[in-house]
Length: 179
Figure 1 (tube, rainbow, N blue to C red):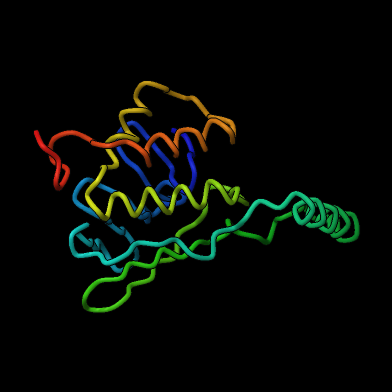
Figure 2: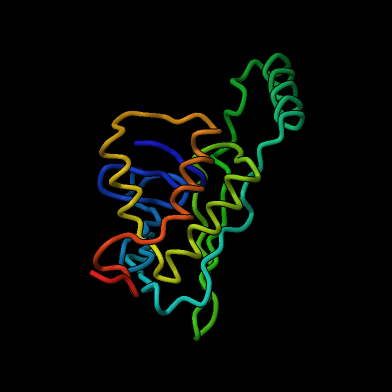
């Protein structure tokens, strides 16, 4: 498993944000579309039905801000003798799916406390490419099978996202692809 941009990638699946929680709730990207497993059950949106798929409210990596939060948490821990971040859950992101019938918004836990602006932009472009039918999430799962347990550093993650965004084809089954 590895986090690359806004995606959590396993050998078999690509998720927006974090992988499934203990209850199995998650947002999964497939070759067919977006699938949300949540308290309301399974919901899905085929890629052709989406006018847009955009992740909003993404936590941005900010070294100064992160250092400030860390210092504040340490101070609070010293003053209250509690563990830093004990009351915080994972940051949340908002996946906005626009269809002909309106917009659906899904809150998903982020896989990290902050992403680089380049990771966010490249991830958004990759989501657009899925929606356009220009590539498919299976490219990411194929990469994951070859790099078991690999956790790429930020420059490597950005390079992978650029490669996936610029891929001209993803093989059979992708809308518009020639077999």
